Image 1 (cartoon, rainbow, N blue to C red):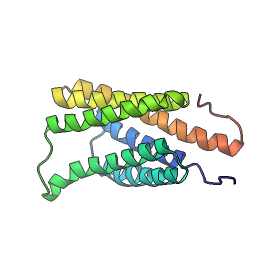
Image 2 (image 1 turned 90 degrees about the vertical axis):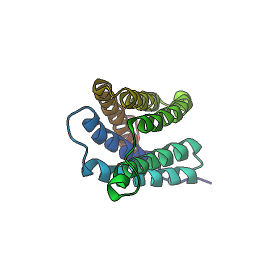
Image 3 (image 1 turned 180 degrees about the horizontal axis):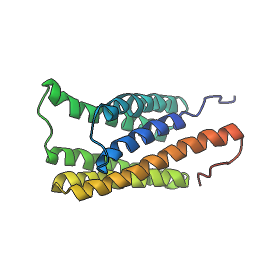
Image 4 (image 1 turned 45 degrees about the vertical axis):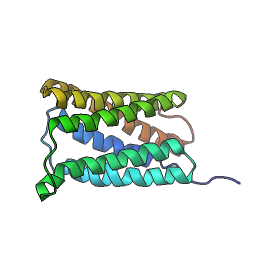
Amino acid sequence: MENNTVNPAPLGLIGFGMTTVLLNIHNAGITSLDTTVMGMGIFVGGLAQVIAGVLEAKKGNSFGLTAFTSYGFFWMSLVAIWVMPKLGLGEAPSKESMGYYLVFWGVFTFGMAIATLKKNTISKIVFFSLAALFFLLAAGDFTGNKTITVIAGIVGLFTGMAAIYDAMGQIINESFGREVLPLG
C-alpha cells in the first residue's frame, strides 16, 4: 500500500526558521523585542510546528514528531514566559531561571542533534547550531554579558536561515522532481 501522506517537514522547518530569524534579529541587537516576535512565536513557530509534528506522527516519524512538537511548544512557552508577568500571572523570570530554561533546551537539542548524524547535512547544521544557540543564550543570561547574547543572535540568524534553506530545498526539490537545492 502506497503512503500518499505529504511531507510536513517543510511546514515545521519554515515555522521554526522564520521565527528563529525574527527573534535573533532582536538578540543580535538590531531590533527590540515586540509583538512581531510574540505573534510569530505563538502561531508560526508554535502552532505551525505542532501541526507539522502531529502530521509527522501520522507518518510514523518519531524524530519529526518529537522535534516539531517540542520546538512548537518551546515557542508557545517562551511567549507565555514574556507575557504572563504582564498579565499579573506570576513574576518575570530571573536571568538565572531563564539561563536554566535555555540550558535544558540546549541539552535536549544536543540529543536531537546526535540523532541527525544519520540524516542529511543540513539537518546536522540546523540542530548542532541550534544547540550552540541555546547554550550561548544561557551563558548570556547567566553572565549578563550582552556580547555573548549578540554572538548568540548571530548564531541564531544562521540557524534560522539554515532551517529556511532546508524547508525551501525540500519544497523546491519535490516540485522539480530532482535535487535543485542540495541538502547533503
